[in-house]
Image (tube, rainbow, N blue to C red; front, side, top):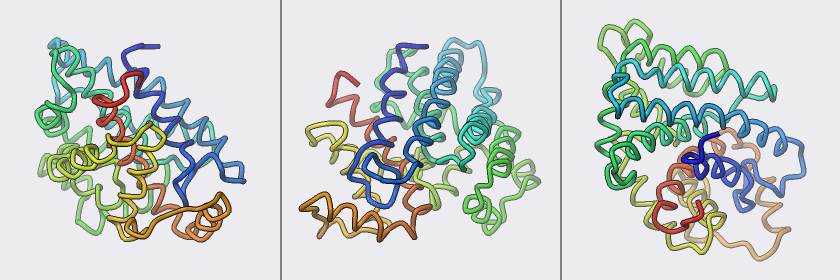
Length: 274
């Protein structure tokens, strides 16, 4: 297990377990899904380490961006999670954690700040990947039943043949898929939103509080929760809101990748332990 990726691995568990995330998985939920999602996070540990290693290998010239196979790595992580838990994985959490670990491996090797060089890192990895790798990611979405993502790609006319014909990179797919899952917001089009929100949450007193803040902010930006009037006076209020939002569970689950990315970037400045 790589110590360099410990903060990123720990954050997968923190993101899932933070309590003030009504409507999605959290540690006050009374169903059994929370335990299954912790197993899902556990499966990510191996893939986060692999992603970090690939980032280092790119920096050292041992591989090129077009054969990093990040799409294939994410597809494998999604399949492994589903095989273990029997649940459809939380797509964005897989995408964001593997992407950021790759970029951290690259930035660490280059002696760069992850946050400060993020635009350059994304350009030199995601936007230089091969169309074959984009197809691998799509195959992973198909294998794990990611219907919202697949429907959105289809509605945008993104087929395997178009990916190959137009040489669409992972960066291009991220731009399209960020509409349905915030874990894909680590792209050049949405990056400023992620960075700006990370500045907001860095003011919180703890990582748990930052996760909750990022969640509410992203839910507000997607018109699910009104952050301006959001307040909880008791645990019973939170439980009632949690139940009332369960009908939008899949939509709210799609916020967790963005939450993870935002807090991971904020943590480089605010919480040294992570």
